[in-house]
Image 1 (cartoon, rainbow, N blue to C red):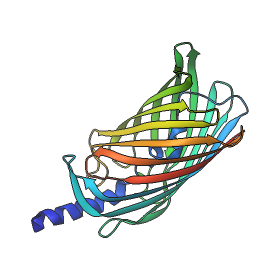
Image 2 (image 1 turned 180 degrees about the vertical axis):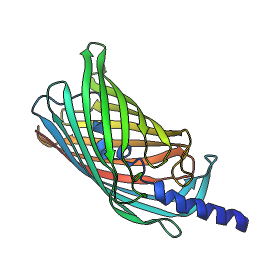
Image 3 (image 1 turned 90 degrees about the vertical axis):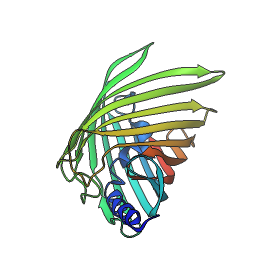
Length: 270
């Protein structure tokens, strides 16, 4: 590779470290719960999880895979839902991130953006479940972990249940528009979760998360497209406690790390 091209790639990588966690909310163990269903009145769910991400390659501005300095990131998450009524659920999510890519990448650690939201069930019937969700994102500890301002998102969630042979499952899809502060580009987001109960206690989850930036904005923040896929198993230890283990990968994108990650989480329903 010519020296000039290597320099350009390193410069791009320095920027990648800055927005590598910019959509971590949708790429970890907690993402499975941002769906169409609401919690029953007075009941809720708490998830604590950790995601360990690594990358030694990335996608350039055209989406081609290139070699890069090593990217490393750990996310420690706390997510909660509580049913204010049978149709209205409150949401809280916070994350501590340790971002430490190889030089010349940007290092950062601390609290990332904190999420506060409400999900309202518009309809529940034989056709499925439809819910509208409004969320506010408070700024994190640095511009590498959030936009540094107050972001807002509106999301439509659609869910349905089905039977496959003798197994039961569900399909959940979400479509969102996120308005970002400090001249960061706004985002369109889509999520799909397919769940299948393999046994009475064991559930398999296959998920995809996609973000696309739109409009003008900062040139040193994420711009373009990124898609991730996640596979995990959730084992119900008791009616209240569960354990989730899985893997996550960035499957496409523009000027982003090609992440490979492992995740683990502890669930508690009450």
